Length: 287
Image 1 (cartoon, one colour):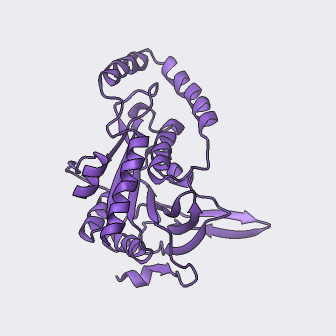
Image 2: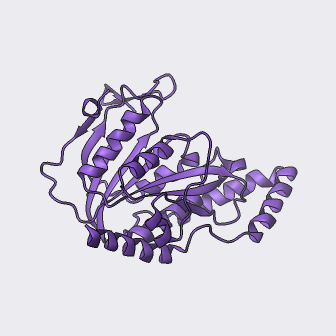
């Protein structure tokens, strides 16, 4: 299967972008509690974003697993298929932003990833940031840590990030990171932890943590204030814990362990922002 068969993409009327960076968040294995996709969505202004491309869902999904949705509007039925739209926002604060909020495919991963990389190259993206959320042994009473990695040596040195060290099964985000590395496109992976005992509930505090780091790194404002959602869901989480004595004791143990660790696994958001911009400036100078 060729990318041209599945990627509907046109930039004829778009013009040259201003220092674009691409954000990728995919529903599925690397999006526990939907924290990652919600974080990317917090940067998208529906009134300003322009759809420049879409990946055809038909070859990539087992529709007995990722079932389409049916809706009725004024008596007219319509089907909503899994969506993978590429959006561009011009001049959102500091730079143009390219976003992909999609659904992790079940099949033909190589073709899907090649389509995403093709878009990044055609739009001249200076870097690609994939965001994810994963279940971890952390307490819901603490700010969830955001960890980051990159295989780009210069970018790792500039941001104080580590090289990827995980070995084992992976999702499409991992395959995408490897493909970007092979094409010499700077890429960063940011991941936030979700308390594993609450992974079936929403966790806006994790979404806010990801959004905060992305906002500082990109110097692009997020549209959404998560404060009210954080307060509401904190009450829900606390009620769940209060009804289970063993779980309450387990959370206290996690709190003690968490407090013994460093507060974050990557530099502060402010430091990360300055270092990321220096890296991209240096990259432009080299070009």
